[in-house]
Amino acid sequence: MLVLSRKPGEAIRIGDDIEISVIEVRGDTVRIGINAPRTVPVFRMELLAEVAKTNLESVKAAPQAMDVLKTLLRREGDSNGGDPK
Image (cartoon, rainbow, N blue to C red):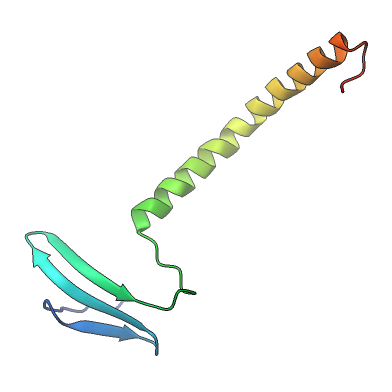
């Protein structure tokens, strides 16, 4: 990992088309600006972590959901004379 010190108004460039600028430093908060092509995804890490956590919880719940769905389909099939449609 490259660690740099920058002051407000200063920037770094990544490759030919990504620029990260320090906009403001206020206490322990740093505001940055990111100028990148629209084809380059830019995400906040805490949001990616939350999505990953939610996806993991969904996968854990999936077997239980499948059991419920199977039970419902069986009941539906019983009420239609054995035809699950």
